[in-house]
Amino acid sequence: MNVQGGRGGASMVEAGANADTEDRGPGRNVITLDGPAASGKSSAARLVAGRLGIPFVSSGLLYRVAAYLVEEMHGDPNDEGVVVRILTERRVRLVPSVAGDRILVDGRDVTAALHTDAVDAVVSAVARHRRVREWVRNRLREIPGSFVIDGRDMGTAVFPDARHKFYLTASAEVRARRRVGERSADLASVADAIRRRDRLDAAQSVPAEDAVHVETGELTLEQVVDRVMEALSEVGAV
Ligand code: CDP
Ligand code: CDP
Image 1 (spheres, protein in one colour):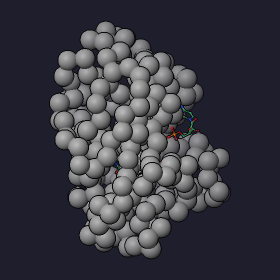
Image 2 (cartoon, protein in one colour; image 1 turned 120 degrees about the horizontal axis):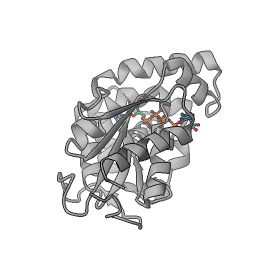
Image 3 (cartoon, rainbow, N blue to C red; image 1 turned 90 degrees about the vertical axis):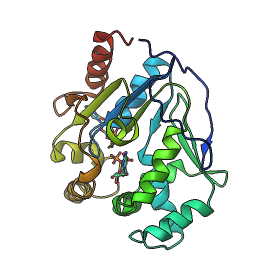
Image 4 (cartoon, rainbow, N blue to C red; image 1 turned 90 degrees about the horizontal axis):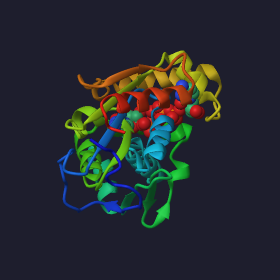
């Protein structure tokens, strides 16, 4: 097994392309890192992907852009029909790359606007809808080649046959301390928002049975990445 299969370039993925549900075709390797908010999934996934020279994809960006567009259009995030209509009307593209994926809406790069308190507040409501989850799942399954992907249900619902699965954990307190520097709110509000999202995201956050668990509370980011690389190395993947 070798994860160097799908090296390199950015590829565009947008609504309408054929879904490919094969997670382990020849030369293809999907590595999943799931876990709750601020457990360090995307930071670790980016570094692991960098070490392997394959793209990194953050599945949360697709839910975040859905939430962002609903806010922009003053839609009701609890109304599945409204959310789906907005996603159908706008041209949303996910652009995976070794440097980290980007989200384009009608050609405009909105990635930098997706990690805000406002998006955090409504994203779980948007992510609850079955048809929104289907839309995200189909976009992700269209991504060709090998990549590292983070989220909640990458190792379960989206890429159940992925060869290498990880689940990162840390207490809500630790995660709030990590996140507080990245948001405008104070520690107590960030911790409340994280606990609220943990509750709302619980349905899609069950770890895969075959995931390697990494408790990150006492670890630096580099140590988490080393653990993941060691686990990959133990099974001969790198
Ligand atoms: O980085 P953080 O964990 O704060 O957020 P994220 O991974 O960008 O995910 C944002 C939100 O999208 C989550 O709170 C979930 O509501 C939703 N999400 C999901 O339902 N399933 C995924 N695979 C990824 C994200
Ligand atoms: O993607 P997710 O929401 O799970 O977390 P993140 O945005 O990758 O990480 C949140 C913050 O925690 C980042 O500033 C990381 O540098 C930091 N951090 C970490 O990810 N892992 C550790 N073991 C320690 C800190």
